[in-house]
Amino acid sequence: QVQLVESGGGLVQAGGSLRLSCTASGSIFRLNAMGWYRQAPGKQRELVARITSGSTTDYADSVNGRFTISRDNAKNTVYLQMNSLKPEDTDVYHCLCTVVPAFRMPEHDYWGQGTQVAVSS
Image 1 (cartoon, rainbow, N blue to C red):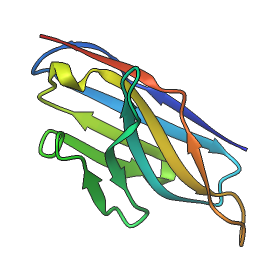
Image 2: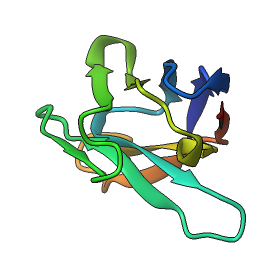
Image 3: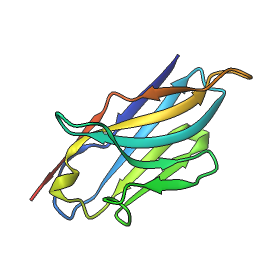
Image 4: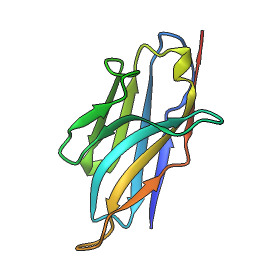
């Protein structure tokens, strides 16, 4: 089993910054893609940013140029640096990690519990 622990959410004024972290622990042979998604009440979860095991990144158009995703493989951690935050960035942010639990085992997706980001105008 794999556990994801997220941190770094909070309340910030428009134009401010936050840094989210997500650390994976448990049965991990290899961490493949890692990413951040967000979900507002009553809406579908949407991709914010994603980073592959080779550090190729992908961003939603709405955050491109403002957010930066990175990973520290030694710590099994993915980060999301969020700058120039806007009120429309207010959401619950969830971490997603694709994990290979053991040699020759298939990969599985694991979700974090979510961390609230609130941006005031």
